[in-house]
Length: 60
Image: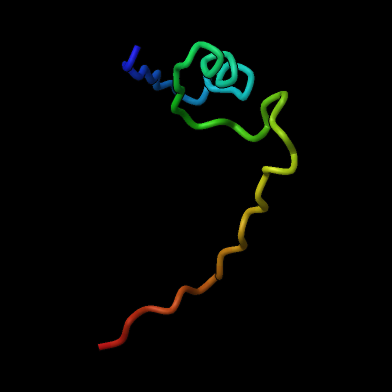
């Protein structure tokens, strides 16, 4: 079977566990995973970068 299947989900239906289940069925899953969901590996969480209070603007 040369067909490739992909399922696109929103952030409420995307998880590591469901992505692994799709891979077992030779299907791909695309979506944003919330980092605070149960089962998300803490090693993959990136710290938020601190924004500057004043962002330099271009001068004319």
